[in-house]
Length: 301
Image 1 (cartoon, rainbow, N blue to C red):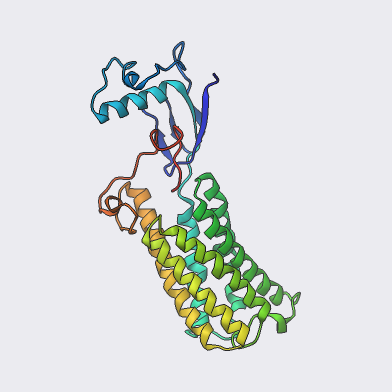
Image 2: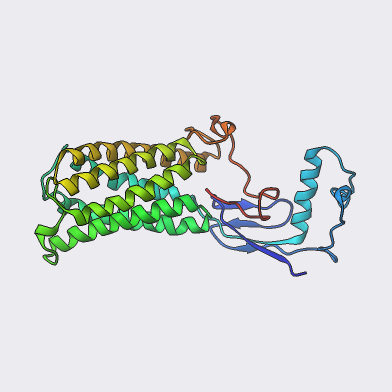
């Protein structure tokens, strides 16, 4: 039987594997070797757990320690640490959504304001967030992949339109303007509304922070679509307020993830599905999850 090779996406830049297995520093991949002859012959039967460690079956803690030692002795683990991609993705989403949402709500600016906003929207809300969506694949986080991939694509397209308008390569009359009928642009938000709504349903299994943020984005997208379909400004104004509130929720969620990653414990509760995970001071879960998945693999962020 060949050695077991698994890849691990973990959220710290310095990881130590138990015992004398391996350590990772500075983002370099390190491989641990299996040891001892007959390393892949495990005794069969429920009574065998813990025997190879010189123990008899005992309490659950002893069984978990024996199982952990079993996997360490029989695995080659490839570690490639990455930070939680949603920290960058949510900060990018909050930045673009807050600036454009405040303009849509009528807090500032004119019809030409997007020509000033598009460089930052294109890079922070578009490029940075889209990259976070692609890195979410490595973290095995389907929700983050969908959210950052779709909204990153939207902000990239939004920035590209106004970049082409500024360069004279796109007709000004076809550019989206608040209060003007633009069904084609409205369909952008119909797609975003449906996909973001599905993501909000999925986020219920993650935490309340993501759920609230995505729900606000979905409703705001629906109002924006209605405004550009009807050529009316008041639905767009409402959407602008919803976008600003969703940006605040995104900032809180990203900040909570950032503080948890830096301090190694919960600082700002996110309303996670498990109540114990929201207790301030709770330490982060261990990156080696033998009972719940592949050895050495952490799924999610």
